[in-house]
Amino acid sequence: MNGVALPEYDPADVRAAVGFVPQDTFLFSATLADNIALGLPADGDEEYDEEVRAASRAAQLHDTILDFPEEYRTMLGERGINLSGGQKQRATLARALAMGPPVLVLDDALSAVDTHTEAKILADLRSELENRTAFIISHRVTAVMDADLILVLDAGRIMERGVHADLLAREGTYATLLRRQLLEQDLTSTPA
Image (tube, rainbow, N blue to C red; front, side, top):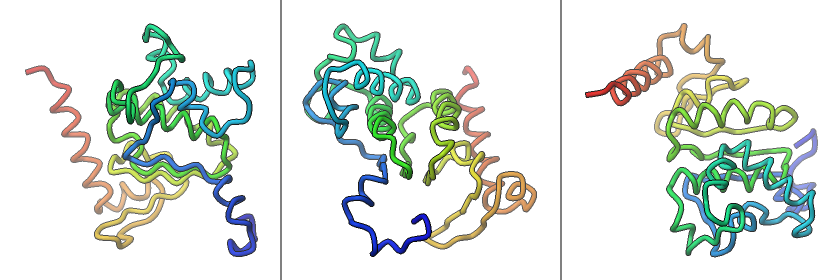
């Protein structure tokens, strides 16, 4: 990392440098603000509150939170039971963004979010990720199509690698997957 072998780093420094957002979220029985701010220093000051709000905006969660009666002070039930799957994923994403790690790993972190919200989140993430390294693991091609490098895996093996335009031109697994996903999206968005 940064030209230095990982064993030369203190493991705590490596952990602090990496933000991880898993597909399966974990939220605590605490307020939404406390869940998002987990790991941030200080509590209740303006800077703390603004970091939480900015991360929530980037994760497309801020407006949803404002619809709750207690807004950011809304208490969550065990494991965030009072939130939808997509809201839980966005809260976990906001938590990682609030920490501001130089490396961010999104492991199918938007799988419970609809494609419209996913597109908004990804658009906002572009500026959030500008000076960071991001690994985006996703089954949805739309989540990775703007990446600097895309690796297409099948059964744990790299089948294709490249940028979006090159992978489409090859007419391989990536292009087939994108066509299938766009067709499915058209079918689900078309009124019956």
